[in-house]
Length: 181
Image 1 (tube, one colour):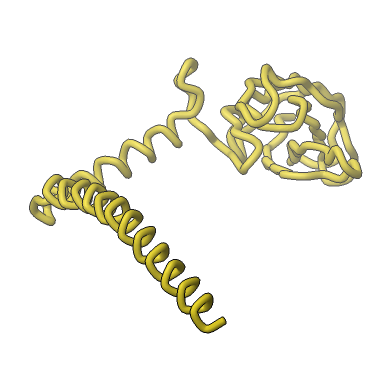
Image 2 (tube, rainbow, N blue to C red):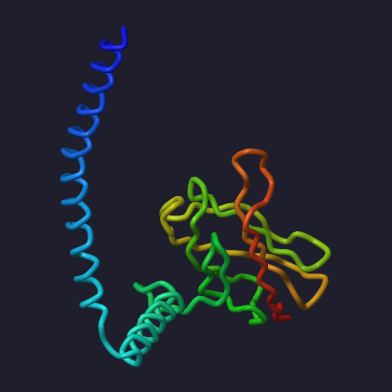
């Protein structure tokens, strides 16, 4: 019985050694191949700290310009925004007449942009429009708001999307405006 155990142990030991030797060469060659690109990366990254800082600052400026450029096709600036809306007009605290247009882009579920216009006491206009594209893309929208009388000389434009789950308001964006007499 001892001979059988010894033979089994010996065969198992040689098998393990053989497999680890075969696998060891592959692992070693993979490791060498992985090390080479890292060395190349280090060589490519060599340069002065000043060059790296200038490149980083240039990239940040490009990102800021893209974020502030508004709708690239219209060249309009973003005057108010959140995760779901980018509004190009009207700007906060601008003066609006009894009919005005709200233009922007939305990234909302099924492209439905809900809105209200209120004067602090009454909802003067409400509804929804459909943006040109639904989330996750940005779609353009345009809302024409008309009203007759206001209780105050100020108003609030409220843009939001309704939750598909429970209908609650999400990503509400409020833009205060002054109402022209």
